[in-house]
Length: 261
Length: 310
Image (tube, rainbow over all chains, first blue to last red; front, side, top):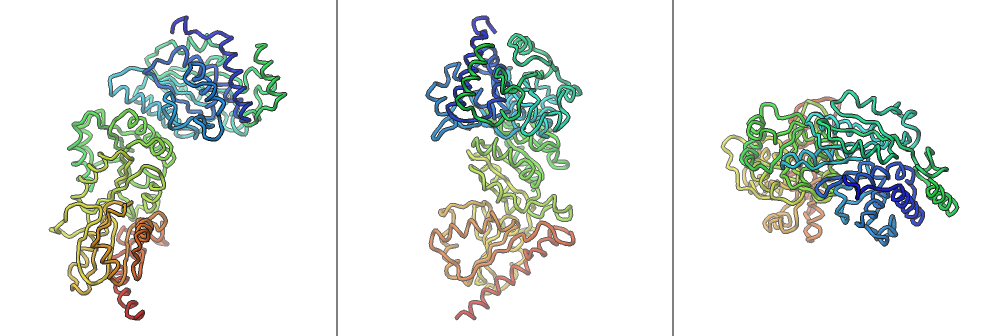
């Protein structure tokens, strides 16, 4: 990472606002989980992801954050974002199979991404390449058995070029991770594996940079303590913002909230 | 057919681009392959969902990927991974399911795969191979490897008598000739019937055709077969698969698109995942009326009905 690539707080705000605008224009929900994951995605893509690296968005419902991140890199344009969730669009509600080269795998059903990342990392090893593979999961999808299958596989095969980022906002589809599965301190469930675990503030770019910069000799898991609906007063830590779209008044309030951060 | 499978894969295994994943199966069969492939032979453990997605990611990088398990564990448990990660991405992962149909017999219904190829063929970009004879396995493996689609090879066991003259591989090939109606059987069942009916006089012996692939384009249906269907007393299709998603349903749709209709038709298929008692593959076939005697009775009934209809 070089300083020239380093995102400023204004960069982060600009992307958050663009995300809100895109969701407002399209009348689409899933905003809360996008705002909890956006900061990490921006730091990974802008500051760490090399052309030969791979990023797998396992929490496919954060597609909006991914599209806006690619927009910030100039890989998608405003015209593309205007089509989000529309008819005849390149940008469906979850990452698509074809049409966007930066998106290697279509996701949306939870519990697939980590296996796809592990397979990618294994293939890189067979090719003798040491590129990195980043996989961003939600916290709720650690209730999927396949995610644990993938972790067992990745650690057994010592796929140390994999970095798992967990968006630990503690809210899932119909309750908190604590209410649904006693998983409010997710990292405690992971500690028995031969992995390197860091628990960081997922909205602190410097903390994310430090976590992503280290090159441990074990698979790294970055548990990001995040806030669903981060930066928008009426959304933060509220489950309904997993689903709801914004109305005009809410949108204006949200933009003001982000501006004042 | 596991030995033939191992031999077929062994012959390809010097290809450094080839990777084989197994769901913790292959004891007393795949050890030579394991030795030959080294770290490219991966026991992915009891984690079929992960195995399939890992396979998809490897195929996405251009590797020739094979995944192996008991047929029922291979297609049913990780079906969503097969759909989303393999089929939707049009990745040429090769699936090998051992013991398709009632192959695991008295092991019980959890081990049966009588809806396997029907389920997989609901997905885009899939091809299915059902070797009839041991000699077919190498061809099926080669054809699967050459395909740009995902493939499923359903393995059973060869069921012909020793010394049976196996004809060269084809998607549909005729095994016997006679005046006793037309019978198309999928996979090893065809060999079973060919052996069982070999001693019948030609007036009673059916035209037996063996299907080694499931989704046949109209051009794959030989003209001879069409003529036999049109001129004969009836057509019976037999397969160790449930009716929905069957070879028969697809084949009859294709026949209708050609305007070819048999005078009478019967589908002998797997009738139930389990009965009130358990038993071997032979026992379960008999329960489903897939045993040679039951199928012969169907063929004989065509003639009787034809007489009644006159």
